[in-house]
Every structure is written in C-alpha cells, then in structure tokens.
Image 1 (cartoon, rainbow, N blue to C red):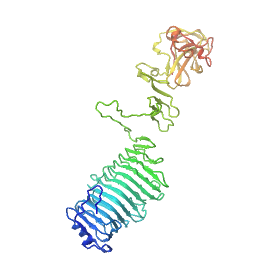
Image 2: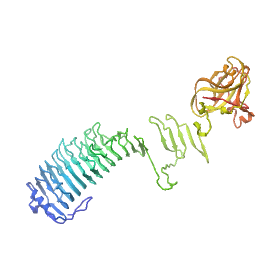
Image 3: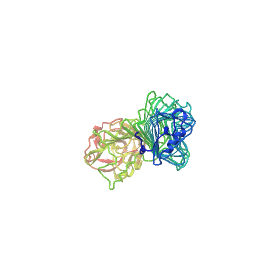
Length: 617
C-alpha cells in the first residue's frame, strides 16, 4: 500500500503490524482495544505502520499513539473503528507526537471525541470518514495543553450529530503559552447531520497573551447544513480561508455567522492578516442580524475577495465591525455591507476600486524608495485612449455630481456638486496655462494688494493709483468697468470725489450697477455725496453677481458738477485699446439724463479718455 500524505513526509511502509496478528477480531462486538494498542506499541521506534484490514473494530478505551507511527485501514467504509463511551485517539500521551499519519479509516464514536487533546506536530490525517454521534463531543477537542502544529486534514468527511449541540465539532482552544500553528484543512466536507444551529463547526481560539493561533489554512472545505456557523476564529493571525463554501442551509436557519473573526477577550493581540478568498454560501441564508462574514472591531488587515451567495438568499452579508485595513475585492453586486462607520477598507466591484477611511490617516500612500527617484516610473499612472476621459473625481457625501475631476489630458474641472462642473484649468498651448472661466486669486498670492484685501469684490483700478480728477458733465451717463472673479452679493458701490460739486439737483444724482448686457441691477441716490470730497461708499440693496464684466454707472446734475477721482487722463484710443464698444473699460452712454436709465446698449458706448476709479463690494 502506498502512503499518501499532504504537508509532511510519508512514513515508510516498514515495521508493518497487522492488528489481527495481535488478536483483533473486527466483528463490531469483540473489544479490540488491547489488540490495536499492541499493534501500535509494536511499531519500531524508527517508524512503521499499524494496519487494520477490513472490519469493524470496537474499542472501549482511547488508543495512544507514539511518534513516527502510521495507522492505516484497508479503506474508509471497509476498515472501521467504533468507539463506545470513549475517545478514539488520545493525542496527548505526555510527550510531543511527531510525524504521525492516520488514514483510510472510518471512525464512528458515541460518548467520546474522535481525537482528544493535542500535543502533536507534523501529522497527516487523510481519507478519513469521521462520525461523532454525541452532541457534547467533537471530532477533535483540545482545550487543556494545546500544541497543534503542522497538522494536515485532507480528503476527509467529518460528521457530527445532535439537533442541539453543546460543543463545536472541531474545538482548539489554547489556554496558555501554546501553539496552534501552520495547520491545514483541505478538501474536507463537514456535515452537521441534524442541522444544529447553536455551535460553530470549527472554533479555534488563542486566549493567552503569549499563545499563538497563526498561519492556519482552510482550503476547499465544504460545510453541509451548518446552521450554527462554519468557522469562528479568536485572536488569529495570518489565517487563509480559500474556497470555503456553505451549502444547504434553510432560509433564515443559520443562527451564527458563517465566518466570525474576533479578538479573544483574554488575549492582548487582535486577529490580523485574515484572507478570505473565493468563498460562498448556497441555499438559504442567515437569520436576521446574522452575517456571512463578521469581523470584530479589533481586527486588522483583513482581505475578502469574491464572496458570493447563491440560491434563495442571494445577497451576501458582510459586517466589517469597524475594523481597520480591510480590502474587499470583487464583492457580489448588492452585498449588504455594514460596520463601516469606523472602518478603513478598500472595496472593488464591477472593475472599480473604492477606498474608505474611518481614521484620520492617509487613505492611500504610495512611496517610491528608489534612490534618486525614477522620472519614468511614476507612483501613479492612468491611461485611456480618450483624452477627455476622467481619471480622478471627488465629491462630498450627498453630491449628485463630482465637484472635482481630472481628465486624462490633464484638464482639471470644478463644480458645486449639484450640476455640471463650471470651471476648468488646462494647458492651451506650449507654456500656456488657461481657464475658460474666471480666476480669483486670494489675498497676497500675487504679492500685491487686491480688492479682497480692502473688502471689495472688484475694482477698475487700485484706489492708491488715484492722482487727480476730471470734471463731470451734467446729465452724462458714465460707465466704469469692473471684472468680477467670484460669485458674491454686492451691497456697496465705491467711487470718489476729488473736487466737490455744488447745489446738486434733488433726485438727479445717482450711482448704480449694470451687467454686461446693459441691464441696471441696482442703484442709489447720491445727492448728498457729491457736495463733499473723498472716497464714497454707497449702500445698495444686496445684489448677486457672478464672474464676468459689470459697469458702475454714474450720472450727476448740479450747479457745479463734481470732479471724480481718476488715475490720469490719456487718449480714449488708449483706454479702449483692443476692446470693442461693448467691452470698454471707461465709457459714456448717453447725455441729458436726470437718472440712470433702466438699461443701456453696450454697443453704443463711447470710449472715455480717463482712468476712473470705481469698485463694488
């Protein structure tokens, strides 16, 4: 017979000891305990095999193993050990069991565990059909001294019975400075024959600050009717669950989470580095409040890839529990995700990757540690065949449209979050940075005073540049252009008088604000202001403005018209250089007026040869 093992070297088929040679009967009624134990004890110290031919071997006391011993049967279903009110294998003989192998057997036990306690390393258990028929007993129970290291369970069927079980089917709980390390369950089918909904099938626990529950793997493991949950891990590090599947649970029948990863209350360390890949649930679903995957708040660096649900309850339920550093990739569409409020996690679905941060920390940090750096190897690279494709967007929670976007060609866009983005910045030509809209430079960014520094929104020129004045003509409508760079509400119109007027005509002196279409937006009477010298701040009703061209309009009528402040007088062809009439900075638009008209025609502007000061705020 060839030895077939996984993860540990196969023991040589030498020192072959047939249990029947030592008196085993194998008829299911004779007590074969002593005969099988004699065969085990007869195996040479260097290693060998105790062999059970076809038969049903009744035992009434635990079998005690030694290192370098293999126990093999003819085949499970043909070679069977039946335990009656006893544990089948005592896995703590007082010394560490090293290099053992148990295979090709059916183990059927009532009133005991199949495997009791654990002081074992480098073991292979394969091609076993295990039945544990008592609701208070387990396939493997180790809760005293636990050293369970590099034990491989492969190609086995594990069955437990009892409609209401009081213990997990596979229970490893390290109470002290013990090790549950580098173990593998692979190609194992786990049956809960009576659909118990109270106990997990696997419960693996580290409850000591110096203990270890580390680097254990469940791969290609199927749970049948495990309404009490599949795997519960407490203070576990580096666990891998790959291809673990839950089948045939009735709707709302699962009363424990299928996979639970938490921190044990007595341990100092959290669970960390758990990876759950390609796992699923098929059939019914968890009861209300029960999860497919549940993480504790202290979990760190958990990766969940591609958990799916099929059957009558097709929506996976994953509770991150506020844990940190979760990577959730290719989650099934519609996954009910909870426990994210304090969690930091990365979620990927339908080709998208989303990063969530519940901490005051970097969401994504990319560092190039190459000495000197490599300009041709960027930390982040985006590429698309379409120049206008969006590479980066951001939004405030509740926005219907991204407030910020960056295109592949480098153009940046901004908006208010509720409609199309209305501001751009881009390279328009070699060495040219351009915006199609308005640019508002805050405070001293340019190294000079701006309207904002003096409580204004826009001005025609810096008031400090006013050097002289020019005498206005009664009834002439004067327009002084200002460029608004940001949306604002205007409540003040600023202008100045360098030589006072005299005897103003009542009700015929006015300043106001026009938009680029020539519509008067607001105005105020200034009869009292024309008779004194100085800067003028005229209050008007609050008027909203958006980026663009506006004119401050003025009209005066007095026995002696006022002289208003200007930076200087030049040719009108210079003040209007390069501009059309509808865009003149300094202009007149009509004569003989006793008030500002409700509208003007900007195309009828006449250029003014004076650089007049005016501002709005």
